[in-house]
Image (cartoon, rainbow, N blue to C red):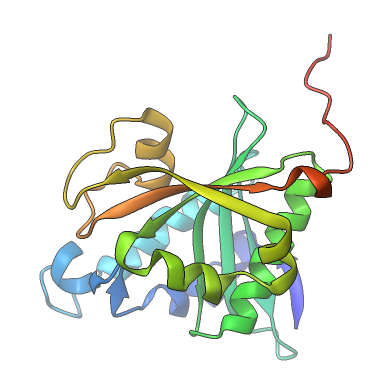
Length: 199
């Protein structure tokens, strides 16, 4: 397996990762579409993702896990904040392979640590929040990073905090109670304090 930065040339190769039965613990088609598996909701979601994360925008990036045949087996996407030293994990997908998920999350964490960003925000279903951390975090990431839950957003309500609403929720009312989680690198693992000023 090889980690790569995704771009427009990978648009078709990632399409299969958008066909999923569940999203945030709810039936994807029923909630976001008409219930007809041919109505194209996945294609719309894929197109929106591709136009944001694969077009070279400075603040939106996606990494992929590519196998020996060149097939993309998983991806992680994130938004890089320009207003504070943090990042937002906006999507992680694989064929339910926790090893792939952990490789992708570790790659994103390493990418951001190299740039001096030691905390990130994610959106989780309240129901699965503890299980998903165990599923997604490698032993190393789990030992080095701690977290706290910033806020809970009840089912089908708008998050009142602008960055969370715009970046994590994509301005969509979600079908389940969700929690915005802040995950941060513990003090003893921080090699330095990043420089936050320039001319």
